Image (cartoon, rainbow, N blue to C red; front, top):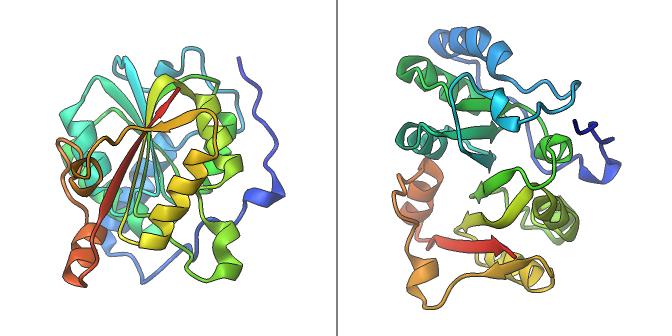
Length: 233
């Protein structure tokens, strides 16, 4: 089994605040009831096979980093019961919102982590994931904060290690500068290739895309979402 790797000081600030307004009682109750049983135990080595994380059989494994209110994560998990999903979200209110819906839906193919996604990436065994999604991440627009953007050489190295050859990395954003930033980092990385062949490939969302509240807000405010698909070569 793979031994957990030590967390680097250089990977500690990819998210902002951890908590917002007081939780609604049903959300607080769902968080208290479900999180302990669904949270990854990173103090122990990842199980072999990794599919043992889920109480139901899974033959594919996806990671979603920063799932927000969980709209995309819950939709994908419901549509693909044979896929195991790991969702990472450090913002307590978002985790609680997702747990409230998950409690109603009763899905059994989701596990979660409520802290830095790099902790999960360093814990996972090599070549274990079929897909990673990074959807509407914080763009950290000020130049002095660019080091906090999740897309970086060191994190793409992490992605390359845990993705299977041929595995996918999906990135969505409504911030032009972050889209360009991501494309530049991908172009400079030897293990990833952008799959787009026509403009439709980045202008239109992926098949089965449910939409998210962040996407809806971007469109209301006049920003155009962009959907980038990369493959681990």
